[in-house]
Amino acid sequence: MADFLQQTVNGLSLGCVYALLALGYTMVYGILQLINFAHGEVYMVGAYAGILAAGWLVATGSSGLLLLSCVFLFAMAYAAVVGLAVERIAYRPLRDAPRLCLLISAMGVSFFLQNAVMLTQGKGDKVFPQEAYPAFLDGVIPVAGATIGVKQVLLVSSSLLLMAFLRVLVLHTRTGRAMRAVAQDRVAAALVGVRIDRVVSMTFAIGSALAGAAGVIVSLEYRQVGTTLGFTAGLKAFTAAVLGGIGSIPGAVLGGGLLGLTETYTARYGASEYKDAVAFVLLIAVLLLRPTGILGHSQAGRA
Image (cartoon, rainbow, N blue to C red; front, side, top):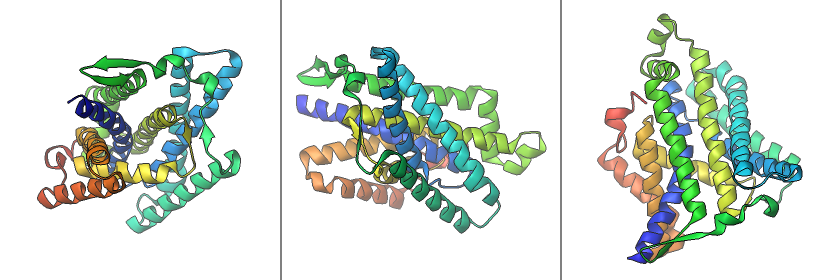
């Protein structure tokens, strides 16, 4: 029982990362009916930005929660700026072009970002500065025979807080109403005065900021990141978004959690080399039984 609880906590921690990334995919799809395949690289850029910010802050004498808070804010802001640039340069000029053109543009941006980071930061992995890593994150909390890391509690709490903030933003603010209006009918929204370009830019910025936060979480968890970080994580996050129902914000959170738990349970109680295969088998099974995803039917048009 203790081991099962331990693996559940591990799975939820991983699922939070997938959920934060999946939210970016599902938000952009809900607004533009477009899959932003460069989103994984924005996540990678956010991870690098967080590590660089940590190094700068150490030089200024910052430490502890203040340092972590600044790292999160900087990485999220940097990723948001990158997301805005991607939308403005690679997607907006092609918004009315055939979908194949947008797909090719997204792939081009993905390769560009990956190689740009490689040229500026080197081919080797980037390591989170030891001096910037708070010692209290290595603490553990015993619960029913399992050991839950302080780092896991902090990271899961941060992820849930960001998801809750997004939910409130979408459902209870003027910006959120504009986003939902554009998602339901872009032409009608424009006719009643909604500024489509501004809403699209805001959507890209928010989704990218969440990806930046996920990048910091991963850099804290594994203490190092590489330029290929975004490919696999982006693919799995897209899988999580489809699993929960592409276009649905609650579906993205649910899909991320299910995918994280599936991978963790498979690695622990099955064969770790098949954990990715099992995750995609789960996706296929769900889509065969419910093509719109778990929550897609009731939520896709409103997220």
